[in-house]
Image 1 (cartoon, helix red, strand yellow):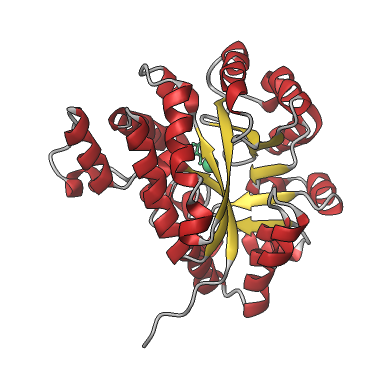
Image 2 (image 1 turned 60 degrees about the vertical axis):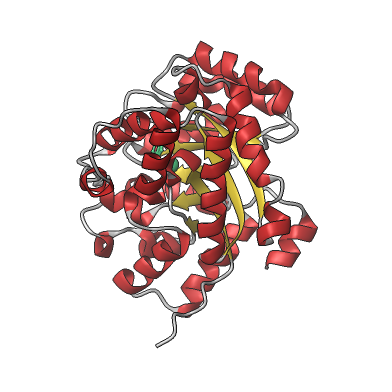
Length: 323
Ligand code: ADE
Ligand code: ZN
């Protein structure tokens, strides 16, 4: 039986560092003389068993040690572009975590130039348009986020927006009110992870204190009826990541995922892969996973794909071409 053609879509929640496959991690470790605490690819893959967000983040940050040069970031992004294209992704908005590299002495210049070198020819090579979104680490101080934003200012021509990620609980969005206001004044788009492990109150804050244009994850909004109504009435996009939610124990099983209830409630949901190298699949894998586990129909899948294009930071011509 031939494999079905993946549905054309946009991917709006993808951490480029979360696309680091074990094979590439070993290749870069060798190239850069970095010692990994795992002997083989299989041994590393066996470590991908997580109890919560923090247990994943510990490994995610540790493996970044292999990313050192512009070429490493170019290779990482190139590998993602090839995989995403094969999965029907026609437009990708890609997160990166500059603070996680700065602490290892890898500066903004290396990270952004390396990523941009891959992305600038993505349309020509893959027919895929891309955006870069700089994420602040919410478990680091707000003044460090502000300094990071200023370091990125020379690259605002290739950075479309800012986001907020890392350990959510105990690091509410309002901690970053000032940095998001500064980013907005600079003309950048605004998104934030909220309501992944954190409570619905963090989603309210992302909307009201940060003024985000999309909520990343947001699945815990379903615990607050008034919040669901607010998100629905504003047609606020939610970038849901089903495989991630299972692997990080936000939900027990894919069959228990709230996605069908979110669609039923009229929320503008999209399906994304988050950190596909760690969570067992890329964009289309997630789409097919929810389809079979949750019994979604053709029409639901079309809605999810259309939502992803409508929620993307693209101009009307590109949107029309993708719809
Ligand atoms: N960084 C990478 N993946 C993340 C996630 N799912 N939540 C928060 N921060 C992240
Ligand atoms: Zn994420």
